[in-house]
Image (cartoon, one colour):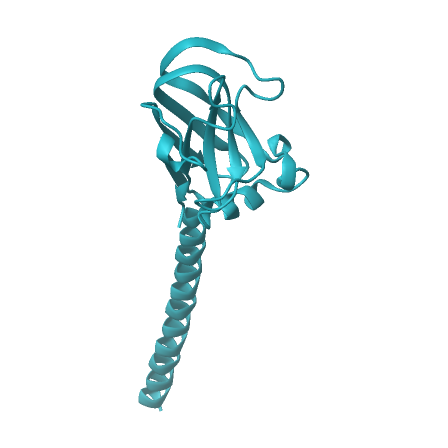
Length: 180
């Protein structure tokens, strides 16, 4: 009888420990999936700006680069806009529209809002850097969530445009990409 008792005791320990192991594996798997989902929220975007991307294209030697990084909590989009060989900058924005088409302004980059502020002469270097939140969205995205802008950026439906006194419609433009 002692052997039968020991057999059932050993058998119950095997079942108990295997159940606990499965539960731990499930907890670990859930934790990994959660961390993976959180990592997908943090996105980086970029745009290379040139005059030939304007609609219609313009003649200019100016170029630019814009970078965007979403905060870990998904509430703030940091940006930096660097330009070279561009004169008499008035303003810079994020516009909503696919490549080859013009669209409306959805966020200001320089200055932070209206009215435009002329930077006389040639600008080389950082034109603007800052943060965009849901409260900064204008135009078609006004009153929406920052996620609305991020979705448009991830779909390739936004671009950065730098406007100057010579080219008020925009001198350099670059489609925003990344974030996938």
